[in-house]
Image (cartoon, rainbow, N blue to C red; front, side, top):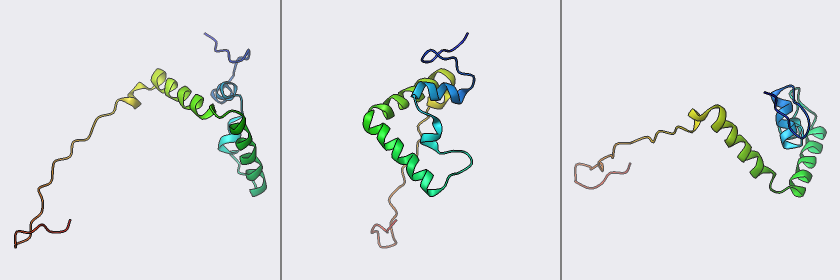
Length: 100
């Protein structure tokens, strides 16, 4: 089965994500090889412009991430609450509560 996003068939996971977001991943994460301070500032400016134009983009990205986790790694949402035993109040020899 082929996945098609916006009329394109992605050839990698990164390309699929970029097509789904409508922006390259490097815009948000920075390039793998690093960047100069000027390049980083320009990238952050571009990202701010996109978020100004599309204020609901973070919600869409979060929703897509949750749906992907539910589909491919649901065990990540299997949260087990930790039960901590109740600690008895510490008392000093005088019977007053000692500082914890």
